[in-house]
Length: 279
Image (cartoon, rainbow, N blue to C red; front, side, top):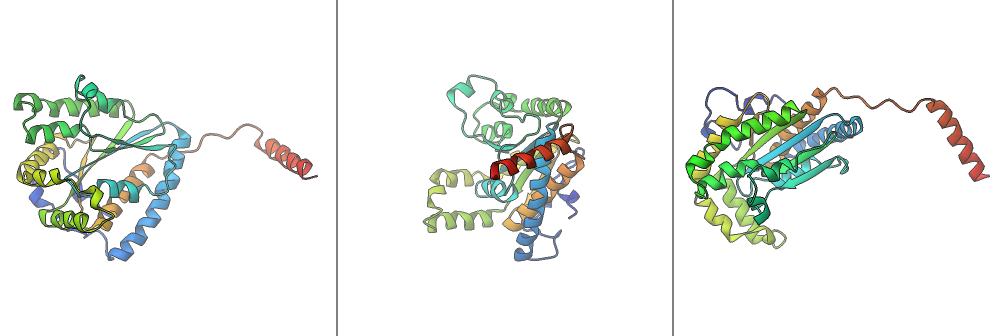
C-alpha cells in the first residue's frame, strides 16, 4: 500500500476537506479481502514486535486521536491482535485527575512514554490540551496557543532520545458518526458505550475540525508525522494503520540478541536431562 498521500507534510498547509473519510483507494479488494489481508500484516507485526522486545533497543509511540466513534479502541484491538503484552501497553488519557492538574499538562504524558523495547499506544494524548481545552475555552488562547511549540519540542526530545512517534488522526464524517451513535443506542451490547454528553460534543464539530486542522498543520514534523486515516470503513482504517506500523518496524532493521556461548553444549545437556528424567 502506498500511504504517502495520507501523511501530512511538515511544510505547507492542509485542509481536512482534502481528505476523504470514505477513501479506500490503496486496496483493490473489498471488505472481506481487506480483513484477510490484515491477518497477514498482523502476523508480520507480531513477529517484528517480538523481535523489538527481545532486542531491547528501540522505543515506539503509536498515538491515536479522533472524534467520538471514529474507532480508537477498534484500531488497538485489531491492529495489535496477537502481539506480546509484555512489550506493548495502552496509555489512555481521560479527563485529568486533580493530581495531574496540579502539574504541567505534559507531566502525565511523559510518565507513560515507552522504555527500550516497548510499544506504547496513546489512546488520546497531549493533543487534548490543544483540542478539548481550546474548544471548551478551558484556558485562554494565550495559554493553549503556546502549547504547539511545547509539544513539538517535547516530541523532538523523545525522538532525539531514541523514540519513534507515529500519529494517527482517524477521519470520519458526521453522517458516519450518526450511524455509529445509532448503533450504540440500538444494540444492547453497545449501549454501555453511549454517553449523552457525546451529543453535546457533536454540536461542536466545526470547532473541533478547525482545532484539528491547526494541530495537523502546526505539529506534523519530519520527526513525528501525522497521518490522516480515512475511517468511515473500519476494515480499511485498520489495514492502513497496520501497514504503516509494519513498515515502520521493518525499517528498524532489528536483530535478535546473540545466544549464550556454547549453545550446542546446553542443547546436549538438556537432552541428557530429559532422558534421565524419563528413565
